[in-house]
Length: 293
Image 1: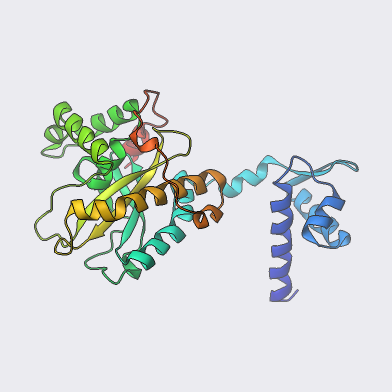
Image 2: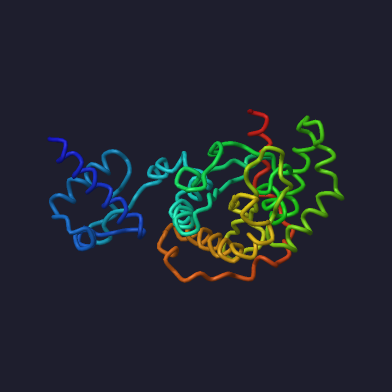
């Protein structure tokens, strides 16, 4: 087979797998109708998938079904990877429209890792790009945006990890009074911001990306940057906060639906941002991951 034939065969096989994933069983006639592929071609592709253990034949009437082996395709994908896939075209569109660099970060242990950044396409991209860099949760705007909206039990795990991290001022930063005051401020403003560091060329504000239909499942954080001489934090919030909240809601829906189609929908801002988080068990403590590092 030539290269084009090999690529075409792979494309056809992927179409079959995608169609089989949509229902518990799919007949040959249904596959033919939905993919447009000839039945002899489908029979060969199905035979290969069955031989490799990715599909099985149920019966002549019911047709074919995928096996659990297909789950291996997603073994290396984390929720933060799905978040990047959903967020990137929306972040890119935001920067093309407003020009300022924006990034998306996800929690790792007691830090936030920048998983996507438009620094490279922003006309105002100055300084190093922080893509894949980690920032302490209680030392960054993105971290405070996360901790202010995550469940109380998860927050307590983060604080314990921070206090035991060995950083010189970790216990002070993670003190109960300081954390409570900063969380109250963040939830009152509906964004997080931290003081400028000497030599820093940007001001920053951050908001959480909440999972749809919840008020305490934080998928990640959006992080906007701009030059301090251009506008104050209050001016930036007045100008961009509603747009960022809409952007965060659209990313959350895209992650839930596994589709990016909703980024074309009119901006709709939910009222979940003012909700009080409900106590529940933390999903993951990530202590083992911390110890591994």
